[in-house]
Image (tube, helix red, strand yellow):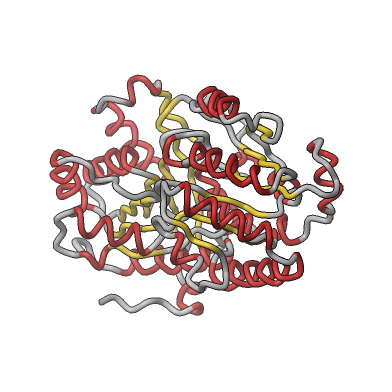
Length: 393
């Protein structure tokens, strides 16, 4: 096995050029933003390449001084394999003198692996996998079997994701799959000066005598918000001063609104839509709830923990790796309205001082293992490690 480089070895490494390949400006790739912003520019030079058309030419990556390239394919065309994209990407790799191609998700990995093969150079390909159940068909297994021969490393965001990749794919070198936890920028959450009362005023909530549950995430099936609504309706029967804040947008919003009207809790539920002030929104919550059906490593959960509020989360994906100690948070069975209801009632009846103690433990847990600095350090080491590996490993 290749020896992991020391810090001094990393510092002594000649500058390497990384090409980050992604489909579009996906807001869910905030960990990539943290990585790009934090990598040492004396060691790494970075280029960002979007496969789809980039209508916003003033991206955050450009503002940070990085090259940003768009291959200008429409999202509709990207649904089918486009051979011309391989040639375009290979040309970018050659012109920019790329050493490592870091692909975010499956489609960029397909194009990135084929493009590096076409260059005929000793380039390294890294594929980043952020979710579970990505190998759903025999066709995907066959394709992955071919791609993995060209890929130097597969980065999984949790051990659960790593185990899923290894168990659902045929690969000769499972040690190529390594876990690097997503890391968040903790400071905006730990240093937010807004009080709970101030945060609630901003959101139009009662300042006192209200117990506020909240969640953050896309309004899609895998996030399980309908389970939360059903559980909250039961909680309201015992605790009528409870409120629920749902932050995020998505295709299920109209269905969720219809459900809360059916449950007769529409006066106690607030939909905030997409927000850019999440640290301030979280300050209004007494408890954060993540009722997901599937997760890789949920960033929203880490952000709530960094805010210092108790959390309830489904026991899925990487969640048990985050909440490994029973004293940190309450994990419930996914899709279980009964479990979720019980957990929500338990925290509502808990002494406020006890909730504060739990909140402080959650902050310490994030600082221990899930900061962006720890992610950047681990990823930097992985870049140097793969560059030192001979071709074919």
